[in-house]
Length: 147
Image (cartoon, rainbow, N blue to C red; front, side, top):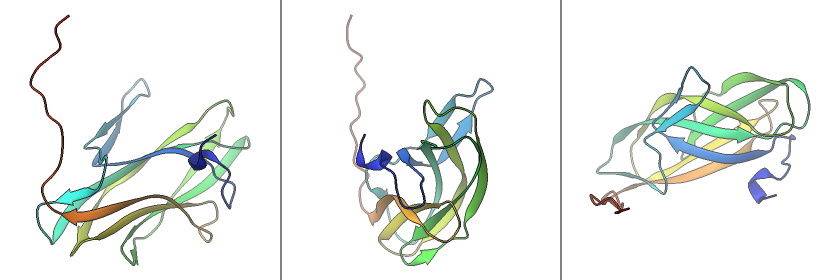
């Protein structure tokens, strides 16, 4: 069990937490993550407006309905919480949660933090990303391997 899936205050356990531009759900239940931020969130200049969504795995510890709140923190500012309810029917694996895309304005370099709560009072940090100005790093190849 990794640190991210260890029990946290409030009882919620999380696996992968991915920050991206958008999460879509197909009719067959599969999810598509668009514009994944793998490292820092790099913008060409400030101020900047970003579309931000989050996909996360929750490992429930009980059956039934469970209230969950999420919120974004941009630097010292908290956006209003996003509330929802999970219905847990199976404890053998994680349940995925997709937060809706929000547009967040950044005036300067800072951090973006995603937090969760079971009671909208005690919050746990799930993921923190630096928001910085610079050239977007990456690896790109136009060559496909030969079979």
